[in-house]
Length: 71
Image (cartoon, rainbow, N blue to C red):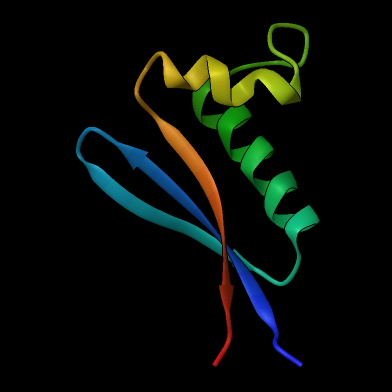
């Protein structure tokens, strides 16, 4: 059995950062949403969860979740 971790990354004009490593995708997605809303002060009334990535892409800022197998 292969185990995986989910790595939350942040890419912007000055570089890349790893924001967290999670055991499951659901937790990674929840944290991604919380971090975006906190950093950019976006409420659910302004932007729905499924539109957050689109909203940030205009700023050339990207949050991605990468699935990586454990060796």
